Length: 137
Image (cartoon, rainbow, N blue to C red; front, side, top):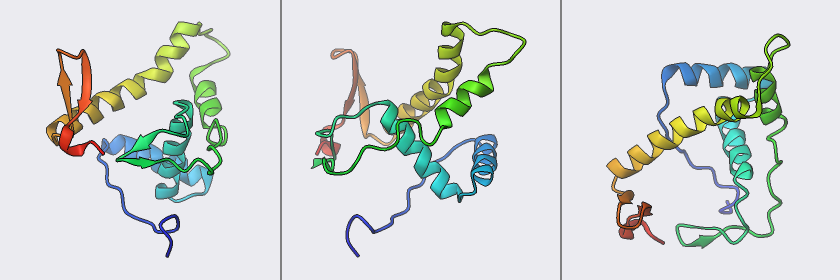
């Protein structure tokens, strides 16, 4: 089996309510929970517009692979519509806050876990987070 076709397990921890929400969304989309999470991660990656030369663990990203769909098959659009209502207008800042709240919480949790696992450290001297040398490519 080629490296591209090989499937490997990825484990993460989320609150039970979030797992239930994901399961419901996956059911509505007619896909497995694993496929749902994979699609959402790819959709999120496209929102960050990683350049083709982005390197992960010392390996170059596949520059011949087409970029994932910008909006993960309408997921972002669906999320915006869930926030809006016909009765209460939302201004730009409210929409941005609603959409980024979950991202910020997930980023905070992920950085906390990465620091506990000694993969990432915060450097006040450098004014931000750094990958630990033993994990750098």
